[in-house]
Length: 446
Image (cartoon, rainbow, N blue to C red; front, side, top):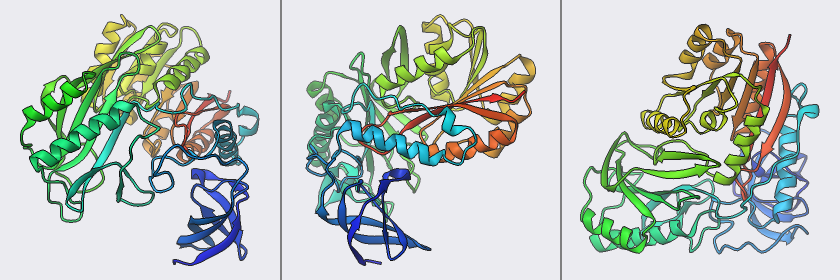
């Protein structure tokens, strides 16, 4: 499986940002390769007549390539396209959406040009960085591609500078206090992740320490070190995750200092955002996307904001809608949404705690709902939610997704239940990576 394929000419970029080449009549998907590259690539995995590979060396660089401003680019799994000018990233993302929606009825006429991010670097408002013990010392960084090996970095281009500065302070605490570091293989040790969330408008930040153990040593010293070095920090949370596996956060938490939320502003609205609540990672583009949704709503619409998180979409559109119901299952997010609605004087907005597949049919029975907005996790909508929509009189579905693959599947399921695709609008929520946020609008066919 470690075979080297020589002089592969990259033809185009395909789903998940792979460069497509062919060897011996078979497709080869090469990570981080772009059209114009000619590479020697090591095969990592094979399935049928398809091979997955990584670049071993370049025979010829693409004319699009630039020098990436990061010493660990190519090893670190955080970025895909830091070596490409931003305008070319947008071109390739548009092409990937075109390919993914190629078999969807009506998509070619509905697809619009991608909307760029106002910030191409340092746009992320949240990160959870894994912590590992390497050569007897704690290491904080990002996972390597297709690996759980942690690669440290000096200055990540995706994050505000506070993130790496605060991580360095935390690493100093781990070393000074000899805190045990978690081992995935043995399920022993304690500290697992260092997390941080920062508001773009106010600069406020919350730090999160995730550990297996319910006890951390010298927490007063940790709080002092963080807050004295970084006055932007308004809270330090200890989250306890005792489970095996890749889930970052556990169900228990302790406040070591301050508060667990930050205050953010989008337009005229002020939001409380808990460290564990969902909120789009690119604040500037989130506002552009929410404005887009606002403008696409019919006046006097009755709207369900499903998977509502902190209620950001529902609150942003409430002045245009007649009534809004924000449906969310996470308790902390529901608390945030309720607080945010009160601050916005959104008297026509109701926060509903519960499962989407249960609450959507009930709300549609009890109220004259005409529009639903979905912003689900990456796995998309489950069959029960699709069926729930099918049983209602909903006229319009606005579907936002960070995983266009599952979105395509769900759009086709909705089409099978009598909806027509009228608009596909990509947003570049994640510059320097192959990911996009994609918005689809479907109307019930008369």
